Length: 125
Image 1 (spheres, rainbow, N blue to C red):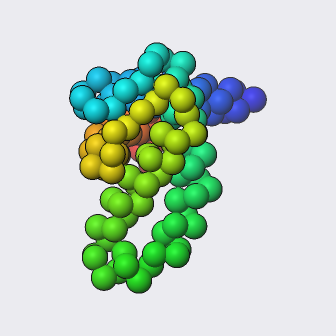
Image 2 (image 1 turned 120 degrees about the horizontal axis):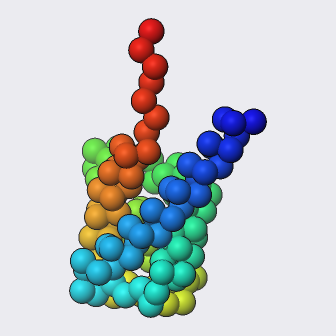
């Protein structure tokens, strides 16, 4: 029971921090606008759903291009996902592809920091 509560609290904390990361990234980039924190949370939610459902499909369909570019095409896929979120979430606006690419790079850095902070320490055997 305690493990389940801890797991759920970890998911909620990650969600709130991802919303904050979306807001901070929009603040850092001049051509990305987020109206408020609720919109940032919605963008983080839609981004998470798109990363789980749409991104794997895009990766499978573009395996040859990804292999030929040594994985750099994955950056293009990330930017496309950001532009998709821009399309579906009102109040979250990204000017063009290049700003979506910059947004995805900065969000990757923030997500790495969040994952590092929330990573549970493994017990030493």
